[in-house]
Length: 146
Image: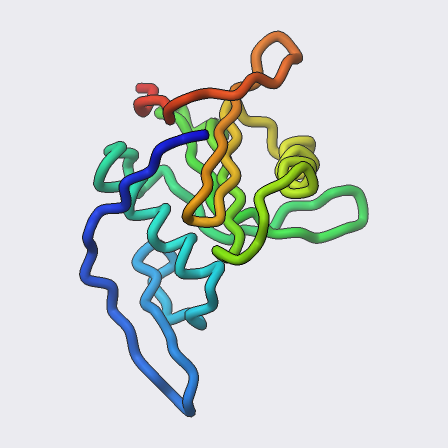
């Protein structure tokens, strides 16, 4: 399990028609504030502020194709050479992080191969490294690779 201490961040929030929205500074737009979005936004700030990953090398909620299926990954971090390097799958805090969540991010990894995989519900966070065709759990997120 990874220990994640989320930094304080002055999120921009608004309410319209009884629905809450949060401003996503990565996508430069207001998005519905769902429990999963709250986890995603806090994890993005952790990567940016604590791990010092460059915002310019992070993609949020982009489409990928798995055969005929269209899916969306939560967070993808590219390395300095602009190659996919770390993928994060976010779930709402009430969702159990189990084998099915790991299998989901592994399926996404077929379409977009990365070295590091992370699954989180905000409270629980597990990280993995893919080396020599093997998947091994890690105790901390790597520093950004230049």
